[in-house]
Image (cartoon, rainbow, N blue to C red; front, side):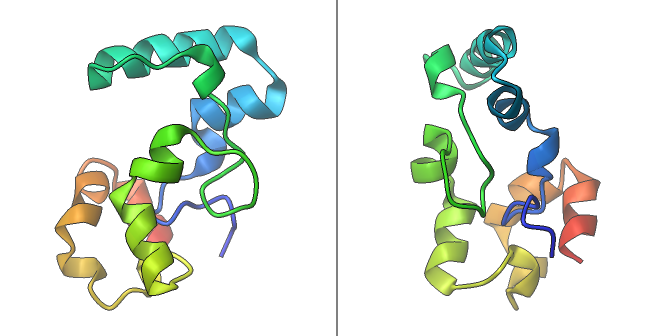
Length: 109
């Protein structure tokens, strides 16, 4: 499977944090930090917007690295993605992503 598909099925290459990191785009970092701060009701600074991808070595956003329950579960289970987990179809944690993003579920299948 493409290493840029996250454990949850999202495409990291379409994520603004990944794009800002790859292109060293400070304006996109600032825009993304502002939006994510508003959406999550927390303070996210532009310097927090650095990510090389969920399943590859390198930088991660604080959320993806330390707070994402999906990523932590997949690492603990040792699966390549949630698509390799026998509980994928019934997982409520994963459904938080796949119920709003049909492409993520398609990527996992």
